[in-house]
Each structure stands twice: as structure tokens, then as C-alpha cells.
Image 1 (tube, rainbow, N blue to C red):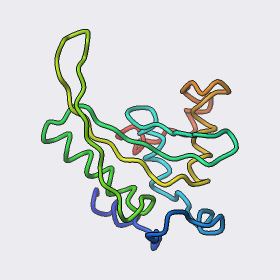
Image 2: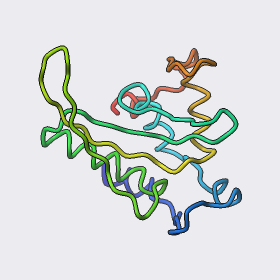
Image 3: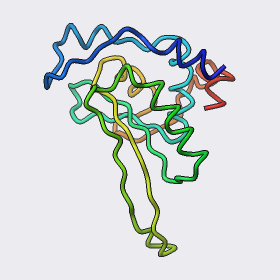
Length: 150
């Protein structure tokens, strides 16, 4: 099933190496089934939507801080699902940080998509007017078994 989801999510989108996409190019990106279900589940967990400017589009960011082998495999699977929305020259970002409570060093890895109108829809669902992440009131209608699995 994972293979079929990956194939379904791969669109014929291409992102050129130029610095910015035009407005028309940005509007061509759409989040279709089953990725629309998957992003709902990810936003309930380790995913978030970033909007640098209230009048601008948003981008999806996914990060994992536990880097055990099965977590890396899952991270790579999620990354593969969002590859159509990531620039071609993308490199995953990794960092280490000190947890001051436990005095332990943790590692994390993350990716961010392009800033696109299709992600702004999810930002409006999951964030309130003061940019605090919330659970949408209509989560019962949005969350599917697939979304819950993610």
C-alpha cells in the first residue's frame, strides 16, 4: 500500500532551478487524494505550516527528532510523498540540540516544501489568528483512517 500511495502522490510537477516560481506556476500545485488525508494526520503530529508573512503563501515543514532506524525510514517515506512540492536542489536539514531538562543531546532532521497557495488552506485550518496551532473544529470530518495512521 505504501508503494501505491507514493505513486499516487507523485505528480508531474517540476520545479526549476530558478530562485522563484511565478504566481501562475505556484497555482498549478494542488494537494490531491490521498495526500490531502495524509497532511491532516501529519499536522496533528510532527508537521506544521509556516507562514512568514500574513499576506503570503505558506509552506509545510516536517521534522523528526528521534533518529532511530525505523524513524529515519518513516521520515524518508514522508519526504518522498512531498517531493513534488520540494525544490530540486533540496537537502534535508539535520541538527543536534541539548535538552536542558535532561541534559541529553538529541538530533533531528527536517524538510520544508516550497511556499505555495495549496499549503495556505491547511494553515487556515490549523492555526488561529495569533499563529497558535489548533485542532480544527471540523476534525471529525477531516480525519480519515489514513490520516490517523500518519
